[in-house]
Length: 228
Image 1 (cartoon, rainbow, N blue to C red):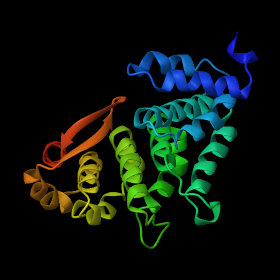
Image 2 (image 1 turned 135 degrees about the vertical axis):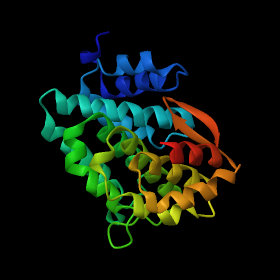
Image 3 (image 1 turned 180 degrees about the horizontal axis):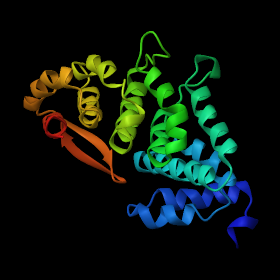
Image 4 (image 1 turned 120 degrees about the vertical axis):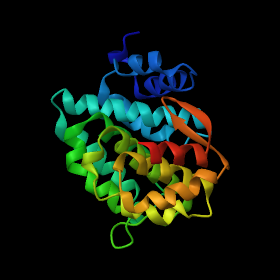
């Protein structure tokens, strides 16, 4: 059955088969061949899946799909999806917003136009005087999203580095590691001493990189940041 004749339920079922695959890049290319607007809502639903690999692959797929929409002449719909991610992070939404900051970062890493429009907004979620996210687990996703964007387009978020400082000394090792990872491309000398302090932090954490969950130490991420 052709992708453009599938029902929403069928699309969601097929997406799961793609998202659970260990070798995700070929599956991602298949997802990008679906009618793009039809996969957006199912991908949002997979941000809440119990399978960690499925959740992360949904983030990657969302970023690719929204970027493709923007580049394919439907920039306004791409903006609508970005605003839906923002709404998910709003207290008034009634939810927690799992996956949304990661997907925002992934989308902007892939699309410069959206990074120019929404880069300051994702940084505002780090700022106590901005739209600060208080949930510690949601902060992990935010730090990953900031890091993903920083590694792809550091000039789009030049003011982010100072707001990473509290996370570099967090009790949560994932905060420390992801904040160090995000800080590297931003090249802010004022936080280099904090990064150097973390070069002796051998706590193991899991980080999603290049389509896979990998084991890293906070120290290794900090050393890479210092040497960038």
